[in-house]
Image (cartoon, rainbow, N blue to C red):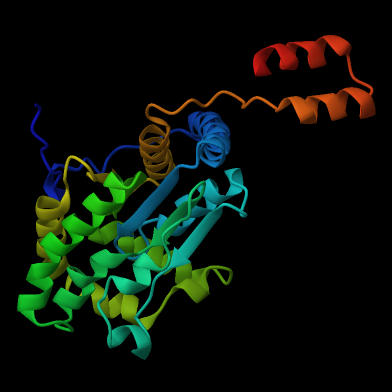
Length: 275
């Protein structure tokens, strides 16, 4: 049995880039594959969870938008996760995530996640050390139960350099259409970069498991990051899944044969697949 080796921030090559033309070619291919995956999940009643974590302005939202463009929103849901309201503060921190897990046939993306317990809650000292340290095993158990129940999990951490983050903050400030993204918290969080790096590396070491591994996405180049992240999603969700178009039942084909003016050979070929 091969041993799983968790990733770490120091080993991430932030110089990776992707040319514009290559980016659009790969983006089209990946979005088409995502549409196939969603249809297969609906037919086979599979479930998928995509976890997005990373530095502020690292490109999580842009990647989520590209994934969303390819999927039918009726069975794809994005959950933006912020500070919990009082109802959840008085209950176990995993409750609000249990409630947002996808039903059979659906895929859910979490824009930040249960890893807040070992990241922001640890860094900001919002949770006693004893409790956030216990969360590593709690999270591993949580994800193991999901995988054992048939849910596929893809965990992505978007990694950028402090200089690149500052460049993106400047872009947000100067661009009126992006200015809403910039908050005081972005600058306050930046002051604790060193503490955050320690917390992220421990999170990767303690919670990247064979059943639910972490993927660290080099994100200094947005195009490269989107393709790298979407490739990881496609690989994990499509593994051992039949992505071929599903067969229509005989009753539907009989109705189509009577109602639609199509080539009879098409109906006959589809009927042969069903039989």
